[in-house]
Amino acid sequence: MTTKWLKIRKVYPLEDMFLGVLFENGEFKKYDCKQLLDEIPVFHALENWNLFKRAEVAFGGCGVRWNENLDLAESELYLNGQDWPDAPREDEAVAELVARFVELRKKAKMTQQQVADKTGINQPSIARMENGGRAPQLSTILRLFDAVGYSLKPVLKQ
Image (cartoon, rainbow, N blue to C red):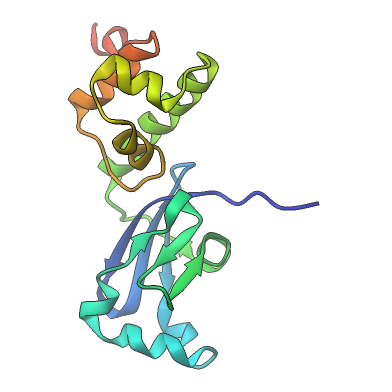
């Protein structure tokens, strides 16, 4: 039996070799990369801030990568990361909206390309949003929900 790990939506390179990570379920974790220095010598390269700050979400949210030689799996970051209570919460709300959009797109049996055709947003941009590589603006989120037949307007009206 294989374990399905939570995908990463966004990564935040922080001071003192910490990574902040936002997972697809909205949880934020803070991971201390210094713990890797004794175990895996190649990670000493991350002591260079110019390299460390280039951390990015690996394709599909399956980890964090800096270059072709340095990466960390989502399972390592999730299991060994600590809760990050002071994380930037506006990203959490956007991540929740994007996750809900993905659920609704799949429920509507629409492909990313079909949504792209309806919204004018190109398919690679939709893929990056869904994989956490790009945080959409509110106007884009509204267009995406509209494309799959849903609206946020009832939530906004009193």
